[in-house]
Image 1 (cartoon, rainbow, N blue to C red):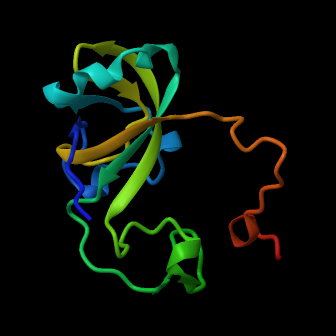
Image 2 (image 1 turned 60 degrees about the horizontal axis):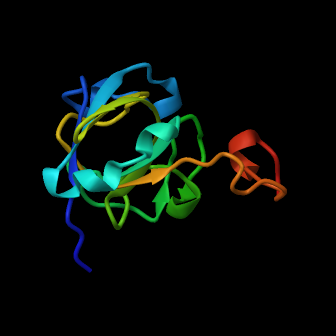
Length: 144
């Protein structure tokens, strides 16, 4: 599989220790620089308030199938967590679109290191799964 970045994410965070745990905890403004060859694909994006950024965790290395997630004292299966060290170093964040200027998108709620390779942008649609029951089991303290 070949994946080619479509841009670069610029943020005020220079290292992992500076980044918020989750984007909803961030008030930081970031700039999404989409490479010029993909700029036409941004047409009409301003009509949406939120975007999903899919990016490469380019500084993350290795993984374990059993992990101890933040704010939990039990080992969990990797795929039931949001731990960043994974077999494929990809991640997503939901951010608020502030404005667009050409191939640059200004967003609020950025939570990644400056220089992170952008793989894709998708629209955030909050009602996409409406009507379905959502379980969060161990995260909210409920059992299955």
